[in-house]
Figure (cartoon, rainbow, N blue to C red):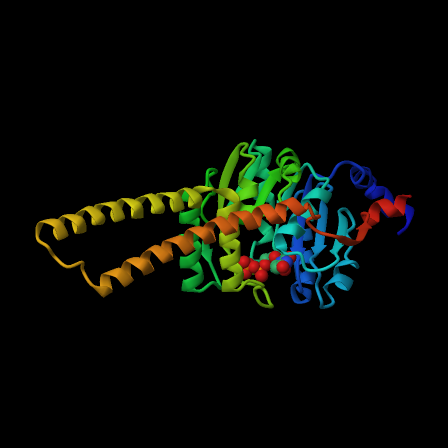
Length: 335
Ligand code: UDP
Ligand code: MG
């Protein structure tokens, strides 16, 4: 580029040295098919802001050529940072790595598969500039998701909002904007089992909800299956509420009460009418019922003990293998 055309961009070169306005955090796992389109669309959306921004890609142990793709990504005005985890730690850990590294004045979490359209970024930033410290994106339509997924998701949100002490807005996933203040609070939360929907809701701050239509995946397949979702749901419940323990106690109390009443009834029947003790089926039923309640309560207790065990080991959330920073091509020309 000659001096004349460089001069025309000089004010932008200066801007690229300031703190980025927005950091977009994009975790991915085996997403080679979508990453190029993702980068193009995110950059186009950020260009509308006409400010220096940052994009952080986190490779969550991909086995395809995703890493070689993202590590080549650059932008004239925006800083592109690529973190590579040493193996697949899960989306939650990948997002945490991204949030720790984010240097923008606000942070947006985005899926690489473009189910969360980057075109909403300017609206989110506008809402933030208008004063909201958290901008939650609520799904209206969930394209590409079957009836079963939608129904189970709905039930999960209802259940969680019932058991959790901190309300989680229904149909709001990880796609959201957070002020750097909120992000730094989340970064200090030490737990290893990271139920992100809960953690992101925990700090509070002022919130706005915007609605959006969730697209179908651009390509590839979802990394979730029902056993994984079940695990996530259990993790969510046990890491954000101790209500199941209370329920186990209640169930124990209720069965003891029933047993007490039944004992009186049987005792009276035998004494007054001389009835023989009711037979085999009812005995088996009661044994099975009590056995079930006991096993369930031990299971609930076990879930919490398991959490304690994992937390007490204090292992790091993720291990970084590579950290590549592509400064804005603009700035590197200047220096
Ligand atoms: N993802 C990840 N690590 C994982 C699983 C998923 O970083 O172990 C990323 C994935 O590449 C995508 C985002 O998390 O960018 C959402 O995953 P996915 O689309 O599979 O979930 P869904 O949208 O179906 O809930
Ligand atoms: Mg997806």
